[in-house]
Length: 189
View 1 (cartoon, one colour):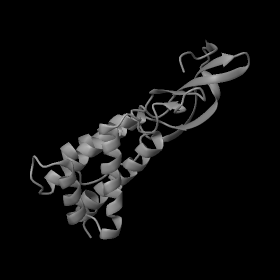
View 2 (spheres, one colour; view 1 turned 60 degrees about the horizontal axis):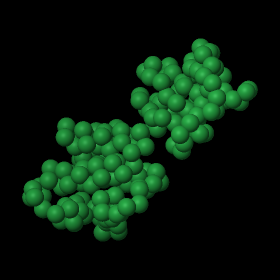
View 3 (cartoon, helix red, strand yellow; view 1 turned 90 degrees about the horizontal axis):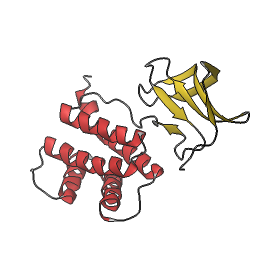
View 4 (cartoon, helix red, strand yellow; view 1 turned 30 degrees about the vertical axis):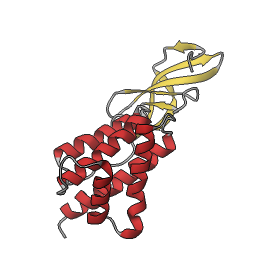
């Protein structure tokens, strides 16, 4: 979309608008914001999060519906600083609709996890996927690590863009892997 129709109406009070904040990740509802209207119809709303005070844009005219999108995946305990930084970067890429970047970073994250868990530096990507599969993944679940590899290959080597649904699946798989490799072992029983 190249142009949002309508005029912005500066109103401090709007009808209650529930959404998940893309910044603080909370489910919130707010009465604070401004509308973009065509006649009496609202085509977009800028809402202010009552928790973190950051604005989000909500509109059916947006392909994604919201900017920034809520981050996919949750906070994970037990991550090392470099792994956590990459994971948050993957989540942030998703939240701004950079699905290709999110999947490419997920590949990099897999390499970093493998090296952190003992794989040699400088190997090819397939080596790292196989290493993670052999060391941490039950045989009947190895296909989801391979899904990250294959989708990452598309993002790296092919023309079509990664779609939102594919990026969501990859982030879900990355989150599960991080919980398996880092969070569960860090919990004392």
